[in-house]
Image 1: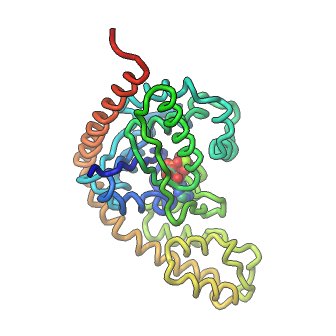
Image 2: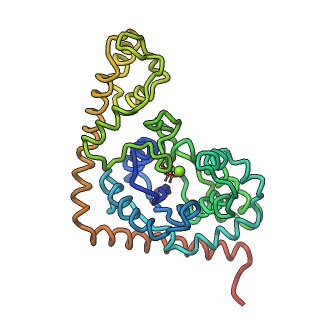
Image 3: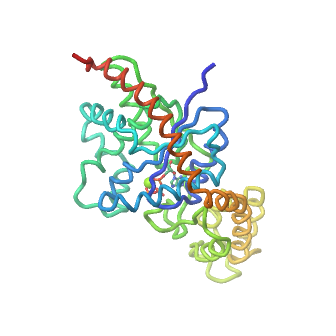
Length: 329
Ligand code: ATP
Ligand code: MG
């Protein structure tokens, strides 16, 4: 039986962080042998907010590649691809944009939140429409599953609706994708904001050295009501406790109890967390160093993956054009 396909990706706007790890990377690594996995470095999508300096994205592409290989994405079974090298995606985006309404894009809750967080004033056409291009990213590869964090759910829903509409209008060519949510769907930022995000500069990066991880965790916001060592804490509103839930599941009962009764202070609690996260990151750092000294091999992995992915995209576009009666003379 043919394996079902997964597609996910990341914007090359910086190195990857722990939010990516729990929200999506960990799931991809686990599932890559069970599903046919496509992972996209979404440089065109990154341009929707970084169009003024596309050259800077090139550097980040290398960093994201290293992060992928470091967490255990196996290029022997997974296909890593660069979005801008597959122009068929842009073509499909144009066809989709004919039947997607502007109001459905304006009402997308994630887009609305990003407009607010990034302080975007005058909306660019490409930014407002990026969920349409994302629908093309997913459907051109006929992906069944998309492992993502909670922020992506509205986009996956939009992609489902677009695929369904295309199939109803023309011919059933596209697969309706489904989101695959991880147990931790949204990791908070060090500043206590709801989402750890590159653009908000509140991240622990997978490539941070141990001392940086430890000192960043020291700055993480905790329960504001817990001022003195003997004040009882409220784990449910503490960012650091949220990190324990994500990275230190074995000890959460005890930490929760000790926080509520002031049995443990915030600095001890943070030290235990930093040790856990550093233990998780150690093998990742090792693999990252290994690939960092093999630039050529890394570029070849991306080129080969992009070539494989493009042939799938070309085949889908032949079916799409045929379904839309866009056949040659
Ligand atoms: P940017 O600020 O450039 O948008 P980002 O940090 O939001 O960057 P993306 O590249 O937009 O990261 O997200 C890639 C994937 O990682 C998506 O599937 C997203 O759901 C997931 N993800 C990102 N941040 C988090 C987070 N804090 N918690 C859980 N999942 C996350
Ligand atoms: Mg984002």
